[in-house]
Length: 470
Figure (cartoon, rainbow, N blue to C red):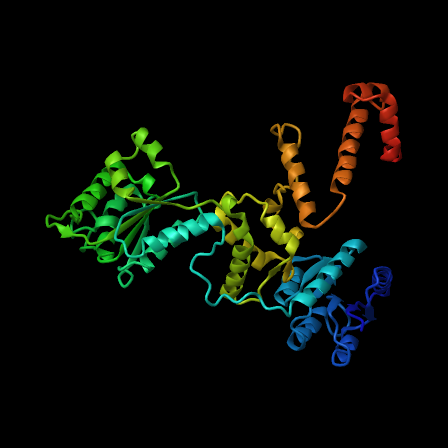
């Protein structure tokens, strides 16, 4: 079987692929026209197709459309000398695995073919089924503590304060507490107190009577009334204005409140769950948060761990988010290679679970193939700057080069490389000597003195690293 098909009316392009693939031991077959390849589909289906877009007769895009109808799992790499936006968009909309503009680097093209072959073998593996997935995922000990706490609170009406960094899933936990409580049949109402302007927040929480202020043309029930009998989730409670803190304290103390502009007390049978990423004790000391309200909210405290504290959960979370994103977008699910999974597990994710979810959504849309490797991850996750500049440029903060080195080591470990120390040591020594010689204008004795090594050592290193040939 010839797993790779090359379709191009340019004989020189076919020749380049023939030589490159033969050198790599990859079986191939070449065609001068898309029609000729189409006629062979039934008798010898390919694993991967590399096709030009613009050819006489049947175009590469038309061929790809027919191929996808008959062999939807076959990856297609499209080539064109016309590197325009329309061609790229048309190729990807047609289901292309990757877009290869001409002229191209042969080694890069072969690498794309290898990745496409790998994907072709994996595409028949469906993404993990999400049926029956727990509402909150986590196998790490820190998350098991959270699950145990939710279980203990299942039949409680107690006020709960959820703390943790942004993106750790505080609302998910609040919803789980509600779903497993005696109030589950009633409403769960969530409000982010930091996202609503101060002038509107009071009305949002407690409602208002008609004519209470300009624009109040009708009576409006607030979130407390909407959550009657159920649960009210107050997110980012640390940002609540002081006067509203006082009103909230009265509700928690007396179980009653008044609508804005109202004179009749309304009884509130509502379980309050509050959340914050801030240090409320510190805000109390700073006079920014009422101490009595803090103690009213802090009946049961539930701290959510950061993703850095539960790295073992990153693989299962990533696969879950990829599968869910694919379902939401109506596309085929992406698969992470083991190297990509291991690399993700080394990241700090300051945005926590929310950031990981966003990365997975980005991969579903932007990754070129169904199999996602380290190179397919977003640049900011791989540790690259948006403009491609190195992390240790002139004027960079001290220690940036160390972080860049750590990222490079992590990438190579994730790829399963060996001999990392030798390779990086050579790179390090080469950079030291090259820059020192450039600084001294090639004067080796002076460069050796600046580096703190002997002249003979420097000469030997220059020969070993072949720097004199550069």
